[in-house]
Length: 347
View 1 (tube, rainbow, N blue to C red):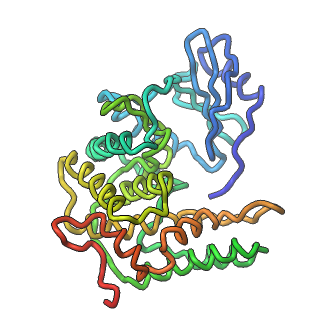
View 2 (cartoon, helix red, strand yellow; view 1 turned 180 degrees about the vertical axis):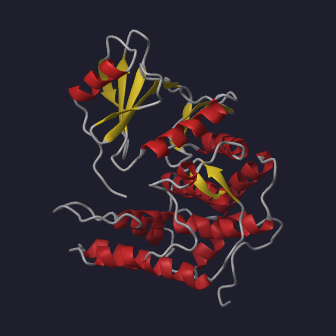
């Protein structure tokens, strides 16, 4: 799913002044975001965030997102409250985009980008998964238009073929080849797991999660939430924190650290991970960089190929083939008591 992010302009602020019971609305800064336009504003009613959705987010999806967001918030989770419009609605529309306003929460504590914060955050991911099992799950909540995850049965050939049709630099072409090899290797493994599905967060790491010691102080960005195996959500967190903190480290110490994170997550669950979930987790981790192949779009002159994001981590992890010895060692992070979570290299 593609489409440009909205541009910050006076029009959005004028619209908020008309549609929301807020006065003295003044822009503070653009908070960033890959798809949403997120504007921090000051008002007489307090600091707010004006969020302008991409054109491909429909009313049903945003209503579902707000309902699911409200479910843990009402149970004490530190999630900002949505501010209703003058008409009492949860959103308003300008042109082809939906606009919502929520209370701004000043970040406290540490983002989930250090080993201590990651260790403190994984039990909260488990608790969130438990909480979301009882959240409302209409089709629009279960099936997001944009996801940070690739299903085990995803067909990536057409996307790879589309990227190959572009004019690529030599390094980019090498990354695409590596990503294709990873996708092919995973498909040839022919491992199928019958895993339970539920609502999950979809982007649980970095600045979306703030912690003070072991306490969660802020949870943001539930826009990628959807219905999928909970280990796919765990896999995304493990992949990106490993990327952030040194993707080239395949030492026994790093593997032990990742295994300990899985065990911390597992220990906080109401229903512990099953043997099938632990066996499926390495495959889910390896699929994560392939997410960036799902949305190929023509590049502008001089623009890097988006496939770089998929293939570069795959190459650095030694993931061009699951027979790579570093990879075989690395994906056994879910093994417990010596039981391998990978398949035999010759099997």
